[in-house]
Length: 285
Image (cartoon, rainbow, N blue to C red; front, side):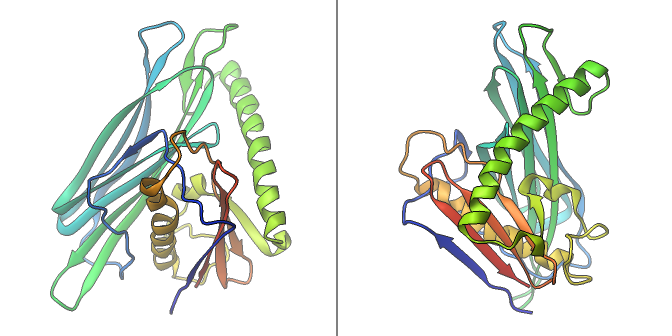
């Protein structure tokens, strides 16, 4: 079944640099190939961690991506996106040839109350002979709440375990959701999206889906293909725009919104960069 990616931009402005960008000099390419039946991922993980900083008003956030296949493959690659309070903070894009493992740890400076969300696509390209190319893939993610308020002790958690943590989580989630909703509503109105015909999913929710729990309304048994092609399009249109950026300030763009057609024909990705450039990607199944 063929697929088509359409990228619609309101101007030719290039995307802006993220706060944090790591990549080797030559870009690799994330490309979907049929899933290999023999090679598997032994592990595929994303983790966010909290460390106290040197000053009372500062702290550090560890951002780690790690994956290992059960044998060396032609190309291993992990692409990770980090959002802070709903806005893009950075991207890590690491790849190796003839390798089985990717392991990358980064540390970011933080301050004030924040919600950190990371999502990672783990990919491997397998060349068994000149004519056959297969792949392996997995998606992982993590989140971390850090509460840094003058009215309470600094706390960090992934899942609330006390009433105080639950209160802070709900307060922060509500504030972030209101900002995201305003951004997404503007994009849906701009592209005249009939919202009742779509299931809406934030990009940061992708790790909650897998072959056993597939995307909503997609054809049965097609999760791996659609997920792989989705990340292929995101990488080409959303991630690689970073390196050609002109602006010197952070992009701070909001989390993209995915819309899954309830008729099972296509999906869309909507996002806007910090200069107001609106983007719509369409993937037909």
